[in-house]
Image 1 (cartoon, one colour):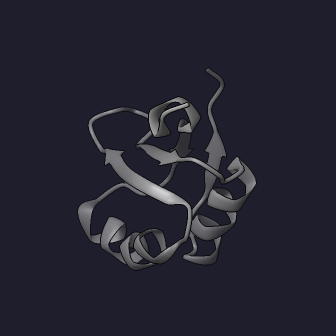
Image 2 (cartoon, rainbow, N blue to C red):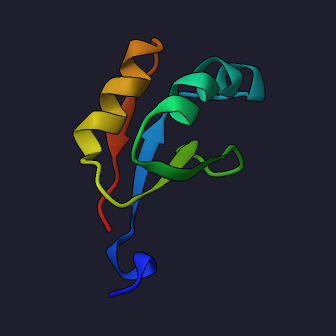
Length: 77
């Protein structure tokens, strides 16, 4: 099995509205073990956060974002 077969993309609705707010969570996301890649889509009405991981549960990502003072809800597939 290759690495890409075990990776999953988690998608979240957030209230992170600007790049300044994104910078406030950048260090937390960058240092979290298990996050391979992440990005925000500020053009989407849900201010979507996408996280590529091979081992993390959505609740873990939600807790990271909440610790930074923002809301984060997993979006269904």
